[in-house]
Length: 395
Ligand SMILES: Cc1ncc(COP(=O)(O)O)c(C=O)c1O
Image 1 (cartoon, rainbow, N blue to C red):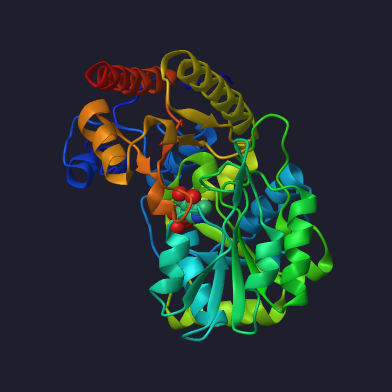
Image 2 (image 1 turned 180 degrees about the vertical axis):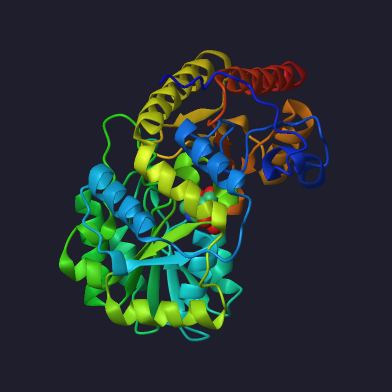
């Protein structure tokens, strides 16, 4: 089947955060939403079919994950990532961000330190700080339009009160798909210092041409025993609203500790539709995802060419994975507040402001390219027009 990702679907009045909350969050309902990380595409047809059949059944009582659910998750990890996952490693959590917060609570004490690598997905900061733990930054190095880990700095930041490192693999917003060599070096430093790695791999299926996602725990048995891998079908298949993620924990002791927390929070059971949608997506979603990745690459090529030709002062950091494009706006010469106002009030686009992602994010923006190309074009036209009218005022 051929999927039509060019089709524009009206998402207004669907309780969509991305579309219906624009007015409340940005203060103007006319901004074009190119922000929060979900897509404006319909899920694969087999997912809709499975959900429809489940709806027709008409009874939505307490729901467990059946054997076939686990088989689907295991099959996906094996097929897409050559990673052999055992059924008992797979733990449920409504979302990856809640899981990160619970993991911080389970594996650290108040006052302990947790390392993150900014600029990085902003809830990494809040799940640590809001739990009364100390955030330690190991900033990424930005060199010639690409991000790298700073291992020398990481070694220096290690001390006995550092208990966890939260890794974003692939990296949001920098777009890096970390290589096996990079992950190995990071993993070894963490092992040497008794620091557990929580690897957020929610974007792990969204990999662009020429790159390969390496699940952190697939690198070695030692890494598997020292890590927790957070996965979900939510970004891959555009079903964040299903509130279903799989936290994969090969280490038995860690797994039991996490599961104890989940039962204390009474979060053991699953959303009925999340189970159905996840199983259908992981069993039958390959074809859709393969087509999606080609479409996203087309969006990226279009966006890159458009910006290079029409928008002076913005540079595209080429993502290797995710559908989030990190744009270097430093040459526009605006401060954080100026850039925010410019994008909202003049360009009329809703994008994520870079400073929110921590140090190194200032004067960048994050644009979500997972929408029909016509919407990307409209957003870029709005930005180009605003930049050129800004320049003519300055001249
Ligand atoms: C790196 C990363 N982790 C987690 C999430 C959200 O996870 P969830 O919706 O499962 O809480 C996002 C969403 O943008 C993300 O980019």
